Image (cartoon, rainbow, N blue to C red; front, side, top):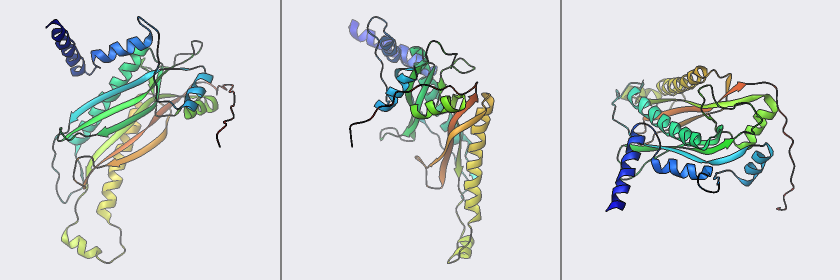
Length: 285
């Protein structure tokens, strides 16, 4: 019975941590073992061999694959059938769920003592047993800078986050003098109006711009990009690189689309730093 009592206690502790936006107790224990507490340090990563070699040549170390997750029930919001409009209730839900996942990923990196996270991927998926619920995950590899280098963490003393590959990270640092700060995003869930009968008849068989569709898509993208830009400005960034705009309907009908703008904010810090590399010739064709 004591075994089950221990399990229940650990589960209760994990429930409290996740309710407060943290990571489960078992995750913290795993990460501390990876740091070498009570044994041999061990790193994990989703880096390719080429990325791992380049990271080592830069003097950096991979510390571990870090993950944040949030299964979020997305509520219902109705829009006017014939009106273009943002569904702000759904926009807020999708943004908050991603923020929860990213903050948990950052907390895992903090436990490892990381200076940053590279190769961050944000993914959204669903399960058959959870209707109107989506899982939001943030995954990346936590890395540590050489001891001789200045602090790479953000102004809030958090590990930097970026969706850069190690190759892109090397190019940014060695060629520009910029450093990554935070993965920034803006989103907008938008209802695209249906065409009425009269509109359909006017465009039938004609080459003509569909103004209501153009206006809706344009407006939704601008809202998402503006929010991403505002997030970067709040962090004191000098710019955003690697920006992407992704559109998905997720679990909604085809006329409800989420537009997400995402990129890595960067900050100018000194002159470019050349890292000497050892070039290797592969034996494969």
